[in-house]
Length: 91
Image (cartoon, rainbow, N blue to C red):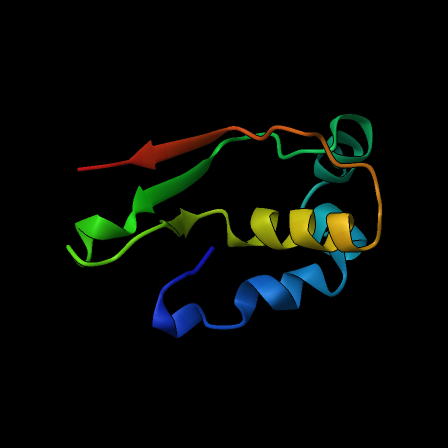
């Protein structure tokens, strides 16, 4: 799931240490990940066709840390829910 060019590599940076990034802001966030395997608030995504009519897929507008934490948790085989909430803007 891409981000803007200015954020290239940022999601993967968060994925390298998901436990740290899930708990660095407030303790409730880390506990929520451990208990529910997902984020507390939905991400904000847009359909890439809004940026480029020939584009496809989704672009992260808000939630890069959450996507990175999820990727890292999946890679490290930590608890992750099968479904995750997101707001998606589409044309």
